[in-house]
Length: 297
Image 1: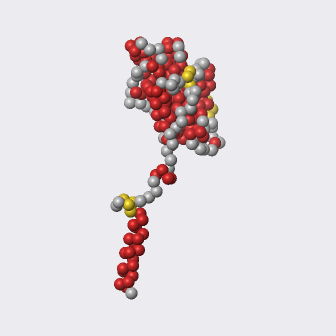
Image 2: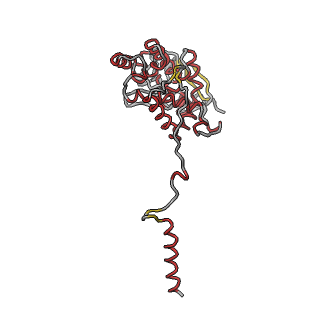
Image 3: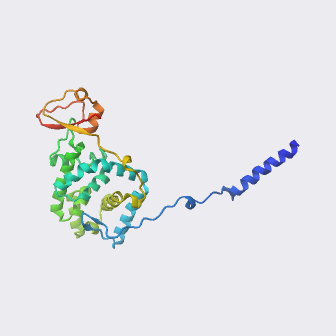
């Protein structure tokens, strides 16, 4: 009896395994039977700030298609951008409107920083990725103690002033946006050398060539997320904590202690005021700063 069982068991194992082996490799369902990766159909009539995108040019069509693919199938990043946009667009949009900057430029901030206070290897910082010299040129305070590139409202104002200058230089919002990546002088010089008047006709560094297509793709995806497979509920979105503003023209010797006076803590205060770079505010010039204080529920 034992001999009989010992013969049957290996046979059963072999019989069970054989259907899963083909030419020595596991036989499973093909990936396409359970997971479908679809080509993205580029929408017709794409535009940026009411300026049309020349999709009839084969290279532009391919560049735009690339950004739609990358940003649609980078699903985790897409959802994070959607969540953060709900939190920060209400701050950015009215500042753009006040300065007569098209609303599409909020997507420039998205591709620059992912709507985070990040720092680039070149030293650009904040949502709008401003370099130190540019930030100071447009009125921001930048030092070890206070860095207003991390102040969303003030940095957005500075970006608006740059974009208005670029628009005056080039005459179109498309070139103004492109110059944000390569600089006004950089874009102007290359266009003159190549004897062209349009961003879409110029041969530029790859990062700059991807710049407008990326903005356009992100704009389309974030404004129509369900069309691109992003599903969420309103309570999945991020919101800005409620706060009140305190005006202050004096020194703060210890921000942690200052925070306690307002029934909050150092971390909560710095999250709302990331432009405060140290645990103190020197304020030798007696500047009047507005500090956001979280409101407890």
